Length: 398
Figure (spheres, rainbow, N blue to C red):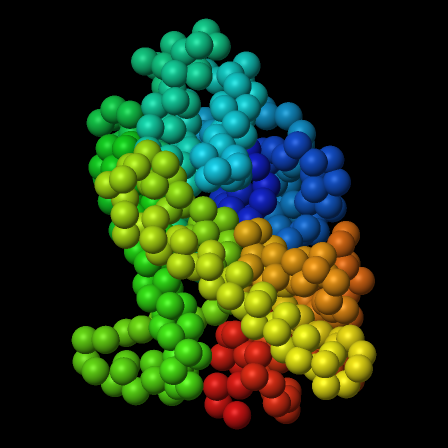
């Protein structure tokens, strides 16, 4: 068993991974560039919302098995779990991966395992190896691999253990040793392949999801045009034994599904026609949603002689979490405000936001002339509200 683990990046994947490993008996040195994040974790507290994570972190810190810092330390295994956003024009941005790789070079020793967990374009694990070489490291004495995370926000602590994992090394030995490491704490099957296939597997999984959501989102816009209740239609169509249409929404958010397909499109060019189209449909659904809300607001103003107060119910990218990354609901709320709509921003999973003065959802309902449901948070499901602007199925069973 590899005893000392150094995890670079203490966000939505790095911190749960660190806490899990620490509670399994590993000595974990977590690294984050944000000092306030480091301080919070060292106090046994968390800076993100994730069920059970607070308990895991508190126990890990109190046991002395988890310590956070702004700098790496020597370890047996290094796990890179930093963001991989994209530049303007949907060009992959792997700057954080490169910086994290450079940061660990002074601490590497022969026999170390270096794992890239960040979802990355095909070839990034090879780039990690090349970056180490360029910084004077003899990579023939290291074991470098990619093992993409495959967890669902809201269920991370359970899925880190239960889900199957894919491990792909830059060499067969790197694959084998890295897979052995994951088998020490993963109950799901650990599947072995090469680094590029492992990278492409994660991108494929999220592109598959994106494509299926695009079908549902396009269907919802067609149903609006035809005067059909999309929720009833999907319920009926899904009674077919081989049909499973997903639920439409206001778009697609999160760091994975809204981002990863662009990694394939950027590298695949014209060959990635369906994947590109799905991304465009899901992005368009967000713009379509904005226009629906603006039209409702304009209609209210024409009929009542004053501007409407519009309650934007939910800012996170999915229900019951605080994660705002690539959130269509946040984008919609921001655009409405920019375009002069008097908005009431509601997000029960966060306390403050730098752009909006957040309003309690009950207070928002009392003030609002127009209610638009953007995220299906559990707090909203018991509300008795009538609105034609339900973009997430809150009123489905009303």
